[in-house]
Image 1 (tube, rainbow, N blue to C red):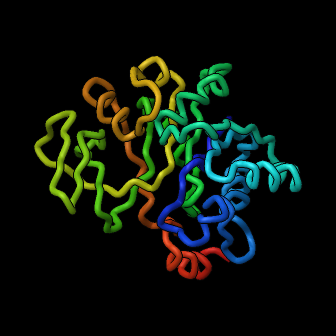
Image 2: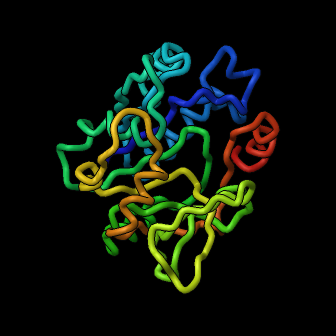
Length: 239
């Protein structure tokens, strides 16, 4: 099985560190987020990984080379010219996944969790949606909306009140996305967008016709290391 770590973002919420470094190199108890997530994937047997880079890409390439990919085979998807966001970044890396019909994992570099990824992958294989999204019931400003199945039905921004609905349901169940996906390679034939775009828009379009599922891991450790103050909290959770 293969995976992609999304590490091309500017990390503006982590300033001033990201004025001179990529967010992937933020350290939590002496280990970078990049190393932690490569090792997290490897703990489930996933050691063939592609990483997209844009912000200070040479620093990421250098640390990977110096540490032999932290024990995994690592390929770089270079977005130095333009950051393509989550959807565009995945589409650019399509070639990496098109040698297999097996599902693959995508995860943000700035999330940490002890979620059992093996269980999530097994559920995805059993139910066979186009994608399965890791979610929790934590409070956030933006939610994916699911029905009781659970299938993705829409998206809502609590701050602005904006809501997008792809399919109707008698009741919507809001879930906070954890930035981890298990995706079937057939998704590439469904992506009609080009250039720079978000996977949120891709999923909302696909959900009109096909199943996008949810894997709730609210009972596990999880943190989005997106702000300087979240680093200290991450160090309490992850030794």
